[in-house]
Length: 75
Image (tube, rainbow, N blue to C red):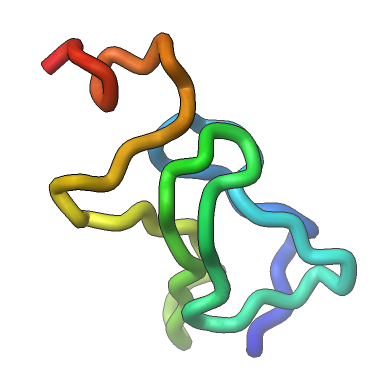
């Protein structure tokens, strides 16, 4: 476990809050769906970096925002 400098991590898909920790601690692999957009992802951390939210690289992964061009018809 690592202590984060804040109690949330930002989503690298939508930029919103992906995951919140009441204790300020995040564990590698914690995850599920982004709290804002629903894109699947997980916490990644190692000795050299602060924890960050990494979105799934599954080609079929999509967010829940019907206006997202990347997930729903833009690209």
